[in-house]
Length: 360
Image (tube, rainbow, N blue to C red):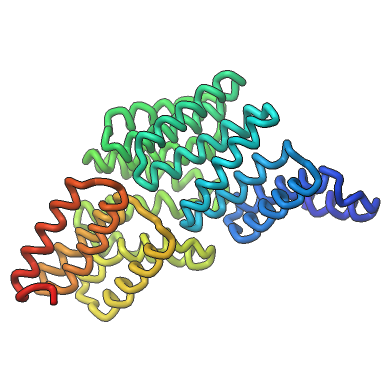
């Protein structure tokens, strides 16, 4: 409401369109819209500010505006586009000596690198962000960078370091009382604990994250719920996982986040196979392939869920469907640069194809 009043005042005084106060309001609006999960509107405001900033020489607004647009694009699964915007934002921030927004762009780029399987760059960029946040004595930024480093190490399969940095992020967020930060860091810690088989601790961490986000009214509360569903897949508790994925999918459908929708359709495959709902499997398989392919979204969790779907499908004699799921896993591992897992999946596909006389 305050932002609405601000724009009404600027309009009432007929403020010159070249005045940077317009852009300041648009960036603030984009930030608010991101927090509300209104990604299309947030991206529009960010891009509007970038265009006007270039036209009117609002150089100090370019880095934050590019970051707003990039964050929305990343959340919608357009990772390559998001990365390009963030790297441009880094340069724009450095050009005007804006250490804060330069650091934020570096940190956000690190998170994208982790998602695209470029683990070395993820850790490198997050460390550069941490150094800048430390230099300007920004503890919230430091905690955010620690979390990005944790995600980079997790993507690199160094789970000991991932846990160390995630725990450091939780402690720092707790010291400054940043409840949203605590929630996101606990979710990251839960991911690491889940990957290393500490399932009870992971479930507790996800529960704490979800409760905090619900208390804050954040639209991101579905993320730890989704991750808890992935934990249940690991335990082969498919009936318990399914409602969590269905709830998250409903949220993603509203927000148009194609990459995450694709991930959820893939995550539901073992649940559908366990229930022997093969028509639904076929629909979900088609949607997963389409959305993951179009968005470029990659994540080891997607690959592992698809592999789990293949195991359950094979158990019921659905060999072709198992092969379909393994092809999703292969595409994910390949994009992540995990040649060892690609080789394992290729062997499984070959073994299954042998049962049906080749792939045709």
